[in-house]
Amino acid sequence: MSDADAQNFYFATTAPPLPHAPLRGETRADVCIVGGGISGLSAALHLAERGFTVALLEARHVGFGGSGRSGGQTIFGYASGQEKLEKLVGAADARFMWDIALEGMKLQRELIAKHAIACDYVAGHLHVGVKARHDAELRAEVESLHETYGYRSVRFVGHEELRTIVPSERYTSGLYDSNSGHLQPYKYTLGLAGAAARAGVKIFENSRVTRLDIAPRADADSLVHTKAGTVRARHLLIAGNALLGRWCPSSRASSWPWARTSPPPKCWARSARARSSPTTPRWRTSTGCSTISGAPPITGCCSAGA
Ligand SMILES: Cc1cc2nc3c(=O)[nH]c(=O)nc-3n(C[C@H](O)[C@H](O)[C@H](O)COP(=O)(O)OP(=O)(O)OC[C@H]3O[C@@H](n4cnc5c(N)ncnc54)[C@H](O)[C@@H]3O)c2cc1C
Image 1 (cartoon, rainbow, N blue to C red):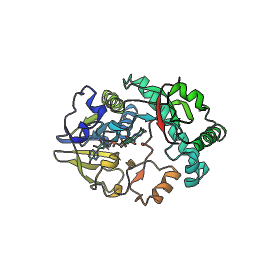
Image 2: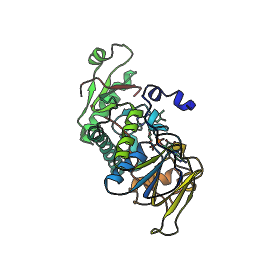
Image 3: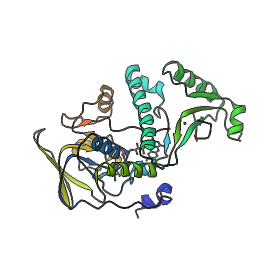
């Protein structure tokens, strides 16, 4: 067991799944996906459901990366908040990104239901303030989410009500969202892997990709090499996130999923430029990356420090 696994509460408290064998020799697929986290697995599942053959290569085991050890919070929007995002990318693109995030939350709940993924999903999220000024900020955020984004599942929670939920004087007020929630991220990732495998995706664990031979033409196969085998595929999706390393030249400056197809949304191209990511004609950002998030009575997870 790696140090990362040993320190992962979610990994340590989940019954070990049946392993997937490493890649040995040569195999062919329409799409080769690198990375067995939620990006790679969700893409694999959806591609397989649309009739593509898919081979997915994972360097360690499914859920080894962020997907299996995240906080498991499935919360609306982005960490920066919408106001900051609007200043960064403009109102239209901030709206577009908002819509993607909400769509991701909805899709996640649909996947959990459709594939009966037992991942301890709990609905509801409470964001609490710890300073007097947070009252005004949280009220303003609720108003802005209602007015600008039509997002009605959030509401302001005053100090008195908050004390009945979290019996502490530490917190001043809160923002409660019935549409957000929490899940056990490793179980969710394993659930996606199970659904993908049942849909026909060939998953190979302990199969670190070490080299790519990119086809010179779009109608020819590329070769994806591991130490013990090769996948021939027409399409590639690189979903290795921060653990990708330096073998994939076009991804050095980015942890976004990369695909050989699909034009990126305009705002992602702009944000890629802003981060100096090398968006070459061959490699483009894909929409395979969505944050996770989830809803009703005030019982969900809680984060502090508005
Ligand atoms: C501490 C922490 C807390 C977080 N909390 C939250 C949260 O509460 N809510 C939330 O929405 N998000 C959270 N995140 C972010 C979230 O975990 C990630 O955005 C998401 O898991 C990314 O999924 P992914 O599939 O793109 O990447 P990952 O899950 O990282 O998967 C990438 C996979 O690619 C594999 N790989 C890498 N290189 C290769 C290679 N050469 N060959 C084969 N395989 C390779 C890796 O082994 C890994 O398994 C958190 C992240 C961290 C680190």
